[in-house]
Length: 283
Image (cartoon, rainbow, N blue to C red; front, side, top):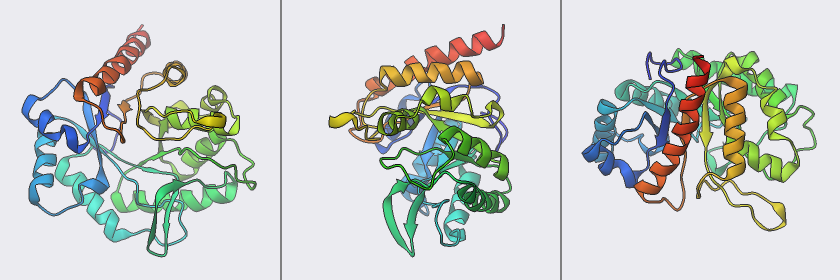
């Protein structure tokens, strides 16, 4: 990854860095393109965790991913929290910062979940203005991520792809597209993930996330990030690369954390597809 705040010049696969792997990464320096850090896990002053983060950042490009900014919320943007994110970006040399298009809290109460918004022009203006405020504070574009959902909001009249396209244009931000979230929404709401990716402008897509989730009884999919990427999501990933060209790609695994070897096998599979896309784009 290259100049801070811009898409990387070397398009590679990265891994979500979880606590279980930190010492292994520091001691063994495995062959990984980059690491994503969950910003909220590292917003501490000094101590072993910050020292470990900086050690990883000395050896690898890193990006920050947040879950607590509540871009879709009604309250004011928490500038104290955002200031800590900015300091972490500077100290780690993070290439970029990404957040979710979601509501995560209200009046100081954290929901510990990513609640979806109605896909309307009103939501685009509300969230887009908040994204613009964050970008003005940080002095750079951010990436915003689509979320999985388990209910359909009756107010929505835009499709997911249309919403993401219009929001990214309105706010002049970049997109982080989670393939598993598209898959979950397809299962839960009957939408077509393949149709939605065709509505998203390639120039806005700066990163792709891959993760695995089980499909429960009754055809309901829950976004757990607790399994290997399933075959449908791998096919969707290949369709994304075909539609948009190669993009930096991250393997996420947040629950039931596996051994390093299992995680790295997922990394290797994603790298195979991304290397193939990189090769084809150079023809």
